[in-house]
Length: 444
Ligand code: IFL
Image 1 (cartoon, rainbow, N blue to C red):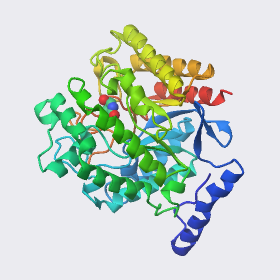
Image 2: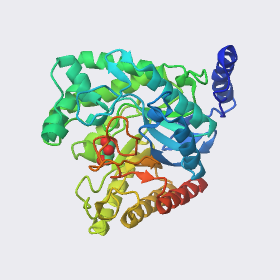
Image 3: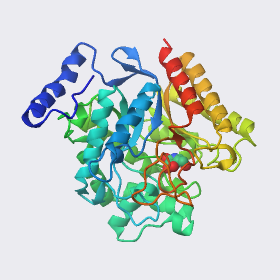
Image 4: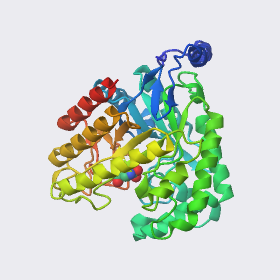
């Protein structure tokens, strides 16, 4: 469905917005809802299978913000470039929390419990309006297990009054993860989180006048980016709270947005204490419409960050087996599954956009081939989002790290700018993504 542009103003915009918000309902009666829906183990859109090649675009709402934070011209140009390449499903951060983390993004959408930055929310409005004009779909995540957007740790800090445990300052990842996971069981933190969810899911787009919950541009709400029960070593004790949090929060979102889908944002087995049975259990609730999993072979030690070519073959074999196992679990639960993050380093571990991507291209090709083959065989894999679109973002900083006010890239502030970004100049990788987009869309 196409949305009007920002040139409509005042009462005209409101009336149009009201009319548009009725459209999905009227259309749904005719079986042409424009909303992505789940039918068995596949997605359908307007009566046809919906399969996609998408991207992660965590900073999309930031680019859309008015004023100095945003860059709307860049956003429009890059949405055009993505769309032209066949990339029309974008996974985006929809809530961030102001934090004391050394490598947290700033500004944040949420300055403190109940305090929201209207400019950044308007950035999300703008992004969704521009995506609608290009017939793209959004997957919006509402929290983060990791430190780079404040996330669960910051809620814990607000509730307890204790400072965050910053892994970028002291290197204690086990402590950080366990602290982040306290979030699931702190009632006050949960009530602030639900308020944040209400702010976003219950919002009406200031540009189109369409309620977010009535906007077919939003394919899915995600509970968080990579929620985990805790650290691999000590997380088991938190599992019940984590499982209950998934079922309850997903139910809460479903009630606010019954036309849209709900997913968790999980990495799969690797984000479930390395235990596939826990992944399955956590997602065995009718409130979660489909499964997600992520694939990070160099983060997980299957391939070397500094030389991705060196162990590419064995790392790929492990990666493909990881993909197959997750598709199988989705079949068991009778739900579709999406590979919603995957990525690999540039050649020789460089961050420089001018450096080679031979190993990365081999990796992308192998992953896409496997997804296409499985989807073609009728398996529940429905799509993928590579990590991450870096577009024209570049850094001049000698340590490659992001500083407040720098242009955004696909790599969030806790990581070197160029680590996993697919830049607008990465023509060979973009062509691979494009070819996959055409192929997966052409499946019957
Ligand atoms: O930047 C990371 C992000 O936090 C995520 N998964 C892995 C990315 C690359 O390390 O969600």
